[in-house]
Amino acid sequence: MTRLRTQQLPRDQWRVVIHNTHPAYLSWEQFLDNESQLQCNNVALSPEGRQGSAREGIALLQGLIICGKCGRRMSPRYHGKGGKRVTYQCDQRRQKDGDYGICWSVPGSAIEVAVTEHVLEAVTASQLNLSLSVLEELEQITQQQHRQWQLRLERVRYEAQRAERQFDAVEPENRLVARTLEKRWNEKLQEVAQLEQAYMQAQRVQRLELSDIQRQQILQLAQDLPTIWQAPTTTVQERKEMLGLLVKQIALTPIDKPERCTKIQLLWHTGSITEVMTKRPTIQQRLGTPEIVIQAVRELAYGRTDDKIADALNERGLTSATGRSFTASSVAWIRLKFKIPKPESDNRVAFHLGIREDGCYSTRALAQELGVGINTIHYWREQGVVPAMRETPHGPWWHTVTPEVLQMLRQKIRRVPLKPE
Ligand SMILES: [Zn+2]
Image 1 (cartoon, helix red, strand yellow):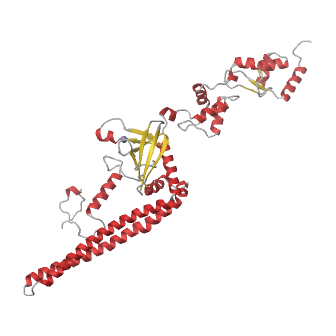
Image 2: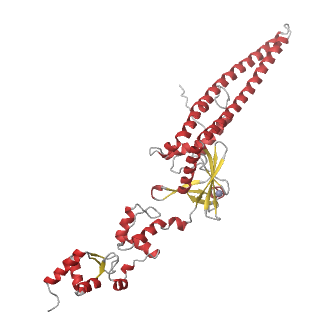
Image 3: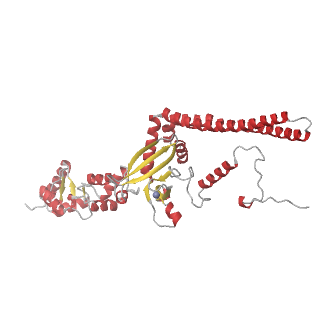
């Protein structure tokens, strides 16, 4: 007994291919097209990698972006902790020519924010316009396909009629010819029937895809997009799919003058093109300390230690350019780098100023006020009698002296006379 084994071979090793044994939903060419598109969409399978749309990944615009400089596809690169930051990069040239160095790249977050805002705005501003023109386009495609079907049907029907006429015209005595013609006529009739069947099938598939589901999806999407988009339950993948329903391609072009920015051009499925610009900071600007943080440190610099400044920054929810929270040493570094003064940490300033605007006394000023030596003040401070603080480890002490504290200290002096009578 022999056992049959089935083994799948790559298509280039097939010995026999019989086309159209079964009525087809799509043509062989269309199948090959689809298959190669699927392969393009799959990074693992495609040697060139990254073409096509919605794949897993956190880059919202993945698969949509092309380089405005050279027209090649731009691909996302992930950085940072957990790959949370994305950069879009044009590096197809490197991959194709083995040429090192990339065309250009741009941080993704600003682009994604700009595209999102632009799309949500465009959709809400002209909801109906958009959905209707998308529908019109889809309808046109359907009509074109309908027309092609009609032409095919007409041709086959005509051929069937001609075969019928030829059969009618043959002399009855000429049986052999008659039989051949009858056979051909039958074949043509069968062809007509098959094509009609296929047409009905195609119509059903098309109507299902275009008219009902897609039409509804698009109309619904246009209305609900902002809500759905912003819902916390919506995943990046879903946002990508929604975006893909509306936008066909996005071209990014770096602009240097008069201001460093990125030109973002959106090609919508409706065929229209819209444009939006977004700032493109330099690496120094991007990785440097955010302006808002520098400003806050300036504000907080007076009367606080670096520890306290760091706490205040963290409480305000501020972070460094790379998303870190602040510590005393990072605040000290910011103060140093941006020359943020802390005049009250200067012993000379303390000496001349004596009493601060907020009523804090320097050691010397307090000693003078009470008529005691500065060592007494040091002693009281160490004993915790007078609340005091200093901003930096070696800076001067400042004593918080309220009228009550002053009163209390005076009583202390009276009880223990420090100066002989
Ligand atoms: Zn490029």
